[in-house]
Image 1 (cartoon, one colour):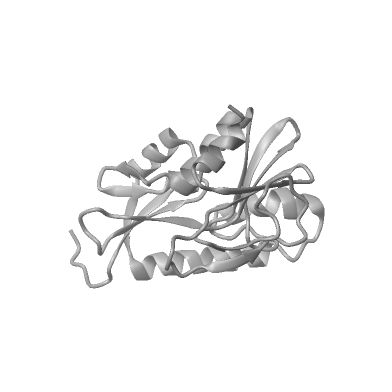
Image 2 (cartoon, rainbow, N blue to C red; image 1 turned 30 degrees about the vertical axis):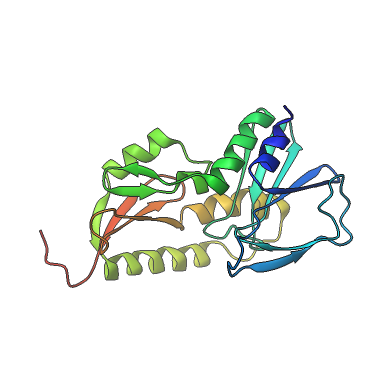
Length: 212
């Protein structure tokens, strides 16, 4: 079977054109969603000249530098907290990542639910290790930590429009500032925040929660 057919079999809309597969997840009936129109798109599939409602973010799948790249990137220049682009050696691997992104579930780690399916660039064992080493801090302390790091980043990295900065260095730097929200299955007042490069994690507690 053509790996791309696996996406269509999962009821995802796949538009092929100019060497890129554009991937969409249609909304269910009565589901509030944004509309997207395909008129004018180059395509070899029957979904062109159609307007559909989308229930999730749009993805791209394309071959570049000997890798199949799965890209979900909405921010310019980005990356935003949920943006990523990750390469796979073969198309089957990439398609599996796409299916997991749209249809998969978060990974339980103790009492935490870690959305690895939405961040396929992360290594599960590295994440397990850092989650096990997570530090507990209050909401106010975590807010101050993020503000301090953002201010330092802005001061040390003046605006740079070079291609190397925008495409390589900026994404790496931004991932050191951004965190993934991981809810707790038992205590809804606590949240694990995993840094996007899996270098550290914090268990954030309400300011009014008594110290242990």
